Image 1 (spheres, helix red, strand yellow):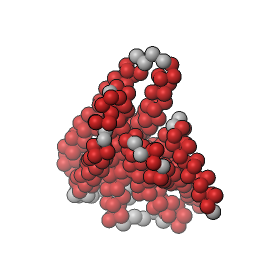
Image 2 (cartoon, one colour):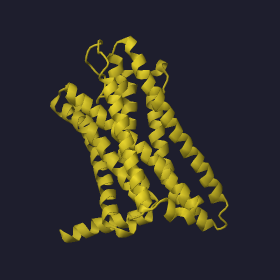
Image 3 (cartoon, helix red, strand yellow):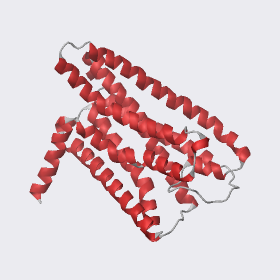
Length: 293
């Protein structure tokens, strides 16, 4: 109905504006504030770029369809949407893993921080994350769109997603995707194990800090990252590992919105909530721009 389409448009408009404003402010604040030119904020800037890319890949087309009452997307547009969404999501996951390593070195090996995370090392790690995300997405997109589609061309979704495309393929073609999924699962599980192991070491190091103020400062730098990682992983696991017995088109749609649209909008607020340096830089940026106008 037209009323629900307008509600859908307004909801996505609000979420996308929040994501664009939050991530845009973080990118501008880190780029313009010299005291934020540190590894942690450099990786945060890269994370904000992936969030912007993710939200701009899925939401505008869905908003256009809601506003104009259409349901169509071209074959090329669908392939592009899958490629860029997987590219941004995979890169974000690799960046979150690198950011965990940054926190680990900062708290567990502070004397080696400048050596292990110099500007050259940070640039190489960020480039590796983007390159890995690109390659991962290219392989998935090429493999998915090489499958023969024999179940029609209607997706019960608001954006093109690999599981939805696989539902349209022939049943015997799943084996071609299975090998890539198995490799992906091993890679993603390896990053997850690294994150968990790093945080075990971080908590052990923090609990050995004698002063309460020192423990609080250490925890305050880790909690935003933990919250973002938990939000990212839990929503994706909920979307792709839920039992088939409770699967339904409306539930699949709601869960997909949860993992594809909500994290890019919430991540900037999670990171800026407890980070006084970032809040001060964003406030200076906003008040400075207002004063100029």
